Length: 242
Length: 199
Image (cartoon, rainbow over all chains, first blue to last red; front, side, top):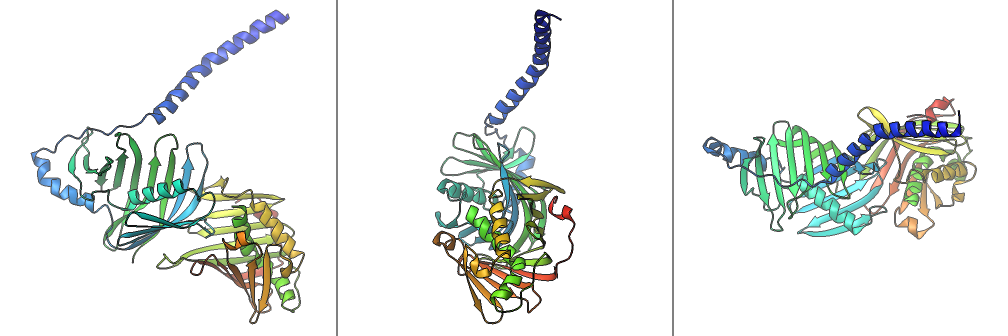
């Protein structure tokens, strides 16, 4: 076989390979773009007359999605970055009246991060690398608040239905942030939208159990959207009313 | 992070590996450690915790440099050190997944610390200053201030003359501590090599 024939042959093989690979590359790019595509706040349809009679009951269900009083939660937390990196830590959250304490430690028990939020003032008492970044502390507390505390404003401003027919409680914060809460017997879903009405966080709580007559999820998954996307998968180790 | 991991596993390792030399330092007859196996219960105390977090696991060491440090609950994880390589696995959905980062690479340093200690005396630990007290208590304090900010001291309590350790308490702050209590310790029994190779 001459060099020319070999080159033509290789070119044909290459073209064939490109033909089969290009659609895959295109699909991957499309998938990557759609992952970065922001999710906008969905419209709510008003509750009809029949729903109105149930609205009070539904709003109460939304309130019951958050524990009341003083609690101590311990979770295993698998942290996964968009680039595939991540780690598993143990998280401690203590809700104590107006204060919120949280700590992260290695599976072996070494405390990596400890902070307290009281009257919107954050005090970090321990932060070891790589958790010593102030931005990390603020982000962590924001996530903990979103998971365990009722959204800012406490009372939902509206209840309505999504296009799919799901009932939703909608909370409006003073800073323009909007939180949608969907609750059913299997758990709950929280979607948080920034002032631009793009979804910044979603929290899926599943496998609820009853502890001290309150509903506590055994599993939680928080997904943060955007360029620095990450996922926290939390599994309940213990929940105690204190 | 490197120093964190060093402290953590040095403390853990000392729990089992140091008794022979600890007894030496305390003036008792030394025991040559070829292998150690034991179970442990770990109590994590923090000021914010109403009750401690309890973890349970097992520990296996084979001289000169093989280690398996396994937590069975609340999070099933395995740290393996073998042939100069350190790996950490976490069980997720019934399967072990190898975790990178969080100082895993630095754990090789720990092994050096542990094996180095096995060949010397407790007072020779490059990282800690040791003080033997009455009642089989050994108190280790960090030599470097950077380390002292992370861990203030470690207390090792010997289990009589058995050559094993009763407990190790690692103090991170005045009210923040990790206590490891050991049980069912076995010295110098043959351990299959596979113990240190896979989770």
